[in-house]
Length: 327
Image 1 (cartoon, rainbow, N blue to C red):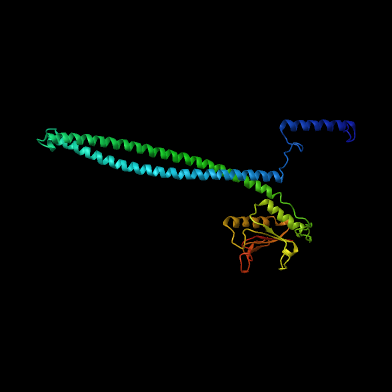
Image 2: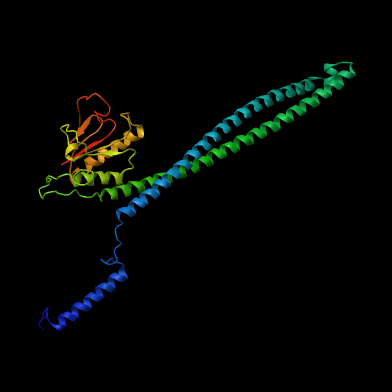
């Protein structure tokens, strides 16, 4: 029997039936189709998730710090309880020794009458001895109660310490999970880095004129805005300046991301932020069109950091701002 022609009605009927069968199998087996695939989250959605998770991490860290403080107090309480317990046990041992000595004297007395042994012929002495024994017994019972109370206190402190330690470990696990999610979202955000305009097919970059009220190129503006979205910047960003210093600023092809004000050294947190911005710019240089980065008296053109000569000040040596130049 001859095969049906692709244009014949029989062929079309077979194709339609096959398509319906494929769609049905896909539905039954759960195979995703182009129409059922989950849409990729937008940059705005990812940033919203990032902000939510950052807030969650802050809450977890605050709870973790509180648990650690409670744990320290529990350790201190446990130490005090054990110290008091040792003192009570020492006093108890001393009291018990006194009673044991009296019992030994009673045993050694042939008459079995300890008051007569200690105070012969003196009935007042016997009465005094009975009073001393009664006091000794009460003293011993008091120390026994004190010992038991201190022991219970130590056990309670130990249980509290263990409980708080377990809670702190749970909070730590939650914090690590939230930070892992943040790393994943940041990684996905980095995949959304907008490409700079004017890139040629061979990877080089076409020259661009500054434009707009900020007097910078489109590529520079794209880089500046991408970093402003990606990081929480503590100070202003300076790009164009008219003074011709031989660099990229008067060409509208560079921006300074300030990490402090007034030429001061940045805080430890802002130094870390500057490191992250500089590394991010180098990592994405081929997407954005970054020519080089200067930060902390070093320059990186894509092949690693190298130190620069001392220019005499914190700002001139780029200790208070990463400088990013564009092609």
